[in-house]
Amino acid sequence: MKIIKIFLILIICFSTNLKASDDFDLWLNDFSKKARDSGISNDTINMVLKNARFLPKVIKYDRYQPEFYEDTKTYIDKRVTNNKIEKGKKLYKKNINKINEIEKKFLVEKELLLSLMGIETNYGNYLGKMDIISSLATLSYDKRRSKFFTNELLILLKLVDNGLIDYRILYGSWAGAFGNFQFMPSTINNYALDYDNNDIIDLKSINDSFASAANYINKIGWKNNKPCFKKIELNDNIPQKFLNTSAQKIKNKKKLKYFKKYINNFEKIEIYKNLNSAIVTPDKDIVDNADILSPAYIVFDNYELILKWNRSLRFALAVCTLKDNFKNVL
Image 1 (cartoon, rainbow, N blue to C red):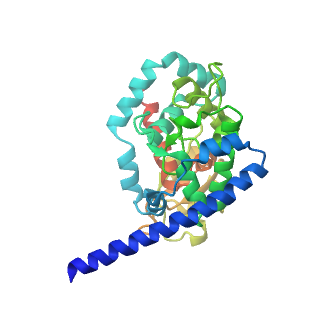
Image 2: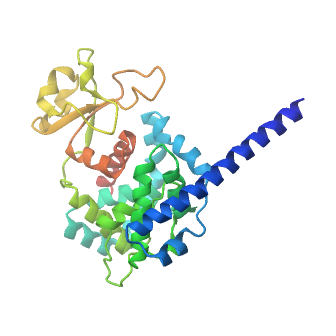
Image 3: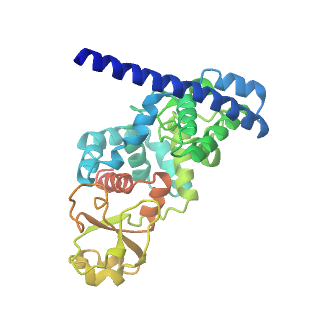
């Protein structure tokens, strides 16, 4: 009986995947028409999409991201390690002149750039091996964020069509991100640079990837040598409306001094009293039975800018934590 049940489950899974694959092929035909209507050449469409396929594991990854289930301490501890700090120091020393040049040109701290690369790909060691075309196509076909990923796939096809990207090297994350800093196609289109002027945007190279990341951060308004966040201790009197638990939009921002009556350790952060700020309690809506008021962080404008890079409260906390660690060792 147990063998029969397992067999039936396998049949159901196979049938489900087969139907999804058939429906995906129909969607791909419709998408190809949309790509042509947007001005992309038939040659590019046929060349790039000929091997696109539905990837069930991409859907699984999308539904089970660490940002959805790991508590803040676990998330940060996994990503901010002594080993990662040492790797970042070695990469910086090896490329010190170029990274310092980029820091000066784009007015973005090297510590932030090293932190972003460290969190995203562990300094190029985990670039991803997924077929980006198939990943983006799968997520475009899926209903959860179809509009977003369809637009990303169209942009990628246009980049290939314009000769800016070689589609044969497009292997990266399950979400369609690419290179040392995991740029999505729209980010490549808007901010990526051929910094060494060799007519190729190579986001796996130090020169192009660091310059592109610095250009991105600079263009979205990063304020050099200003804080991202500070950990705080809240008292029970704070109204719930001030507790941000979503990365989609940080609400109820005030000058830090406004929150003084709600923060037990305010004296440690009083020097920032005139900066715009908000309160984030990232575990509240993620972790079962989490303490409503702890952990808690006062976050500033630079923190919100990191959210434009990746809409995750924990990601931004990890990036800024690693950045602060580099401040002490570089």
